[in-house]
Length: 417
Ligand code: GLC
Image 1 (cartoon, rainbow, N blue to C red):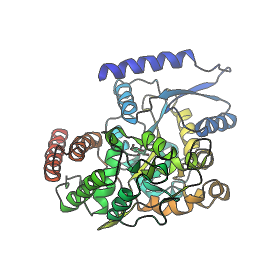
Image 2 (cartoon, protein in one colour; image 1 turned 45 degrees about the vertical axis):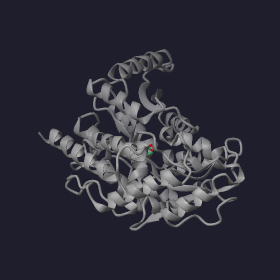
Image 3 (spheres, rainbow, N blue to C red; image 1 turned 90 degrees about the vertical axis):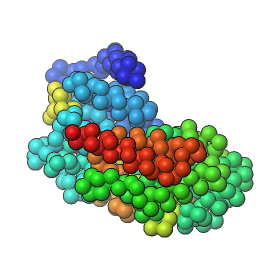
């Protein structure tokens, strides 16, 4: 795996050097690491940034589509102390790991002189970027898991997971559909996001406020039992275990699925008749409830500065622009992504482009976070492996829960040594 990551890194570097932008005298290049986009939003933000700050030129180095591979590429480069990337986008679950490992720069010293007012950002996201009393980046767009459903098949969205499983099982096959429900169930981070929604909807917890592993509890068992029932009875695709966001969205957009769980950012593409066959036949709703209510996982992405960047001020100017009101407004209107800069939920142009945002402000504030831990990636890996085995029928709920508890405690003990 390490070799593959190194090879990709070398190729990306070579490629980026070949396409480095032409520079005017005294211009500083900001090297940025971000995946291939599905909309023009980031390019439009970069254009606006370069127009405002002519002293900078942004060089976009494309990250791989898989966020787990991107994560490993970044870690390999940052752990080696390289300065290839000045700024990089980061998943909401990475700040504790990256700051603890010394990969990113604390931004507090820039904030003191900045016009950016952190009070305008969602508290949950500010907390996500705060670790040991400092801010390690800035939140960009928000994400919460939501339910997409076909309005030509389903009159009112189901209120409980039991009801959803029943309706999905009955409705699969209607109006040319093949699947009742599609979810992110490949063995990767998206599976943990989906599982956490079941776990939290049944009152389960994974860690407590002090970082102790609490996963061996009845809420977790009830949530995972319901998730297994869904995979068995809701007519999910046979190859559901290879489904990530893209596979789900392609299936739903093609008119193959009655229900889909994914993020709000897909809404703009689903509404676009050039990209979807169901543009006028779907709506979104909150996820169904379990015995403790409805729960959505908090996702989202932000920006960090490489601790070894040769141009920290330029890097700050970029990340504060992209995550500030101008950058987030473009990302909301052109990219259809949820702002973490809260005044934009009252912005008429943002709401005209995204009428469903009116309900999303509260959803962001109520969403459940994944454990904040420097070893989150290791904890998540244990969940990914054991929940995959449970869904495939290779482990019972009890076996999966006990295995996760033992592995997570072992990883924590190893880290605390
Ligand atoms: C989205 C979320 C991110 C999450 C991922 C899982 O990108 O924003 O937080 O980890 O999906 O697939």
